[in-house]
Amino acid sequence: MKKLIPIALGICVLFNLSQADEKRVPAINPINLDYKIMPGNPCQRHAADAEIVMYKDRYYLFASKADGYWSSEDLVNWKHIPTADLPLENWAPTACVINGELYFFVSAQPDIFKAVDVDKGKWEKVDSKHGLNITDPALFQDDDGRVYLYWGCANAAPIMGVEVDPNDGFRQIGVQKELIRHDIKTKGWERPGDNNDQEKNGWNEAPQMVKHGGKYFLQYASPGTEYVSYCDSAYVSESPLGPFTLQDDGMFSYKPGGFIGGAGHGNTFKDRYGNYWHVTTQVIAVRDYLERRIGLFPVFFTDDGRIYAQTEFTDRPFFVPQEKFDFAAKAPTLGMNILSYGKTAKASSSEPDFPPSNAVDENVKTWWSAKTGNKGERFEIDLGKPMNLKAAHVNFADHGMRGRAENPIPPIYKYKIEVSSDGKNWKTAADMSGNESDEPHKLVMFDRGIKARYAAIENMSDLDGKFSLYDFRLFGNGGGKKPEATELTATRNPDDRRTAKLSWEPVKGAQGYVIRYGTAKNRLFLERTIRDTGVTLNTLNTNAPYYFSVTPFNESGFGKESNIVRQE
Image 1: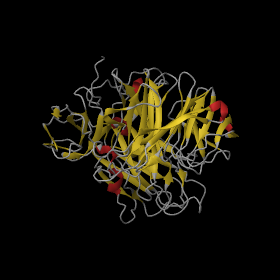
Image 2 (image 1 turned 30 degrees about the vertical axis):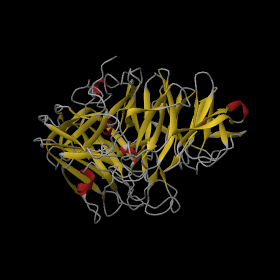
Image 3 (image 1 turned 90 degrees about the vertical axis):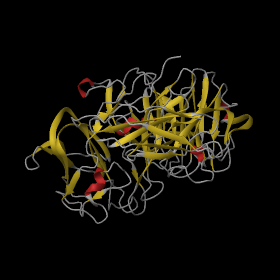
Image 4 (image 1 turned 45 degrees about the vertical axis):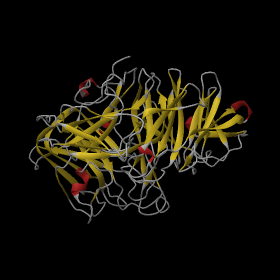
């Protein structure tokens, strides 16, 4: 079996920006879409329950409660396609290419639609005989042409599946089968809460199927879309309707920490080059529990039949390869570090309870807001010393904007980014004053790099609301020393094997730590970024041993991995 190692910035193959070309398109999470502004106040954007399919050599992204869907040639730059032909007011759409045709199906809606001209938003209703009024549907066509329908979204009812006939209105063939049941007594990740600490059933939902290496991987989401612990887990079988066996790690797409958490309710798909990706729901859930975004993670399969999504480094700039790429051997990271975390920040004005420090805290659940949306409102960061800036991630918070019912026109942010060595004399690093696109999560690349101590973003056009930022994130290299390794202590709770307590001594100069764990020493592929020096993990499978490690990081990179601790 091919040897697999935990993938971290400190030990994987890195790529400089000078190597980035048309085969490596820079990206970052959340995906930079023109997220729909929902009705009501306060203003909040929404897109979730994403699914991406490749159809006629283009990618199409579908999401809940959207005004349409999106198309892309590279999985990074997306174009919105409005349509009045689909029931997009419903939740959790699924799309599937069956016999060369693109079909669409959505929750609580018996109708099925087929694309007539997908790039113009033209669809037609097809004959539907499946007779099901279900939630979170998913269609899958096997290599032999047979088609299967999966569904489920409940805190009690199981994930279900049945074969259907696409040539006869998707009529059910054979009997429906129960495929995945709730089991919080052995599967810690199914318990609700940001840290999976509520002793009750979460919501098992959003089944999706992907086939690889002759095996069928049935994924499902839990414990609930409002939690940063929202994840996808995998069962494996030799047949599309089972019987299924739980992948012993349980979760394969998991991201409760970092700038934005959540990695559940999505689908795994193959790009035109044969690389696999997982698109998921990410969580804000401040203005409303359904306030969400969409993330994209590389995926690889192990030779012994497991699936894993790489989640940790996608909070930083990475690249989407436009060629065949081995995600199991190396991560598509651009090798940048976060420079703005915890740095001194000031602003031209601030709303009460929304101070400048909120926009440098690496937390999408907080934000800075100016008192107005007037041209000239400004936000500045002092990095403390000159650093090599490679990119900025601009995340607008829409504070004070009106909801869609009151104002159907999305905000178009016009701004400029400036840099300085002394905080007095400024140079323009990026001029977006002529921007005409709705881009709330914009990645701005400085391809040649910029040496600067100070960076600022300034509003260049009056807004119908407040100029506000979840975070103004700066990336590059701090030019200092990477943190030293630390010694990890891990203890599994003998009375509750779903739980393990991890702790370690603080490392001088470390800004945070990445926990890595899994059910084999060479498979530490579950990842969690934290800022403290200890954590309680409540996500374990009681039927498997676990291995744990911790790696410190700072603005100059990742230190060495700690000792690996095994707990039965």
